[in-house]
Amino acid sequence: MEINTIDFEEHGDDRGTLVAVEQLKNLPFEIKRCYYMYDTKPGVRRGFHAHKALKQVLLCVHGSCKILLDDGTEKAEVLLDKPNHGLVIESNIWREMFDFSEDAVLMVLASELYDEADYIRNYDDFIKYVNEKEN
Ligand code: T46
Image (cartoon, rainbow, N blue to C red; front, top):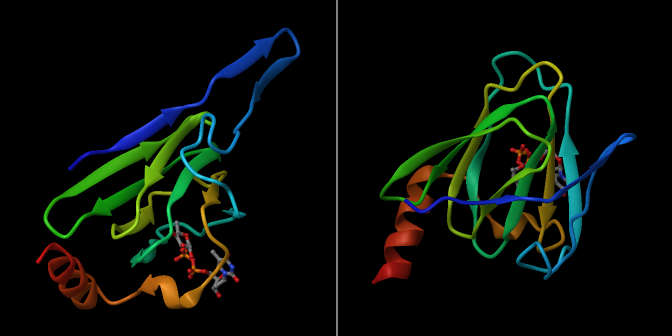
């Protein structure tokens, strides 16, 4: 399956490094929401859902974690371990996040406000949904 990542430009000087994310410039959609997760407990796996409309970019701005992506046909795993390395997740992709380092901060830039109705939280429903969309 196609994996879309964005390596945001690092503006470094002798003070350190700064990364800027700008909607519709170096990010392919308008940002309506930002959320982040940290203090993730050892062995935790989260996500286990797809979105009908939401698009997102995930950045592990501290530490590392892995993301499983599943389009209903193929699966792929992506390691996020650099604060400027973003993973684009389009709609209709099942995702799971795992292998969080103790210090991981996973930040997500989202194209929509939070809406529980946009979630598909059951894997069988997800497969049915993507198959119906294709036919
Ligand atoms: C996604 C992955 C990468 C809110 O109140 N507002 C929000 O914007 C979000 C994202 C969550 N919540 C509440 C809903 C739950 O009570 O926070 C709690 C944890 O959310 P959830 O169990 O959905 O978290 P994850 O880690 O399974 O999934 C999240 C996002 O929900 C999801 O859109 O793609 O991160």
